[in-house]
Length: 348
Image (tube, rainbow, N blue to C red):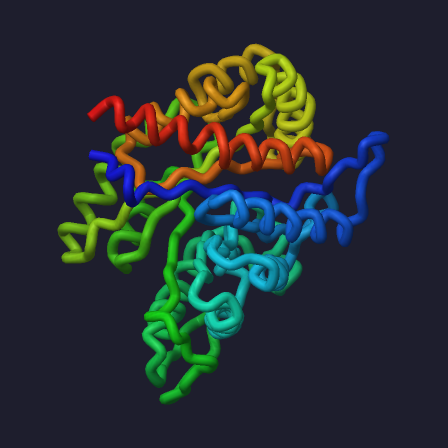
């Protein structure tokens, strides 16, 4: 059963380079400043969370999301500030704790840690890690992170991490610790690991119908109970684009989301996205594209189907313009979210 009063809605950007109105591209710096502006808009309109991705490649502008979130914190009052995701496997858990504890203090308790193994792997060679240790790196670093967020002196030794002996970390948080999510791509092992630690789960649904993830939600709940951990509200994030006109939304999304997925697919062996595939994703799959009513109907269905506590819409994929991105955020906040809540209330 979905609790309308507790239901949260977020937006996420992976830091795609923003297009200018003449079709040329902004610089990375201009794109970053645009994200800060969008965070302020989202906060003013009452969106619950903004997530900023971490990437180390030329088609994205943000490699240090906590810095961008700190800038957003300075121009907002209420919105939660999350990464999407922090690639813990190629990071230092001590530094992750320190950066987020700093953001927590700066934002007066609005920081959210979203950890992941990394669907992009550029950070591994960049920071001196071997991909053959992909799983072991995350497992060990997550275990250390879990000790650090208790904010007590830590004694620790591991294969990939520093040895600590009764080492304290600073700053301490003022707001009951760091709220932590684990980003899941669809691995049962990842679901079980998240439940074991008692963290919240956010499932990345970037292709196919939401129904196929229902078993993962059930697995999380069962695992949490078996580990005697609280069953936390489940979150989902998926790509989308909203415009006043249905055809305009589809045209913009087809141009930009296809280009984005095809570019990524070159390094992953994916076939170029066909129009048939795209249309299927926008009608029954994981792309929430269309006018506000169409998108609201589809989000409401997914929330009800999976019993979600939070839905994040990934915006700005590809090289959309600043005006397109800002208007999408406005429509999401003022048209889509109220309509989703209305639809879910009608189903009670």
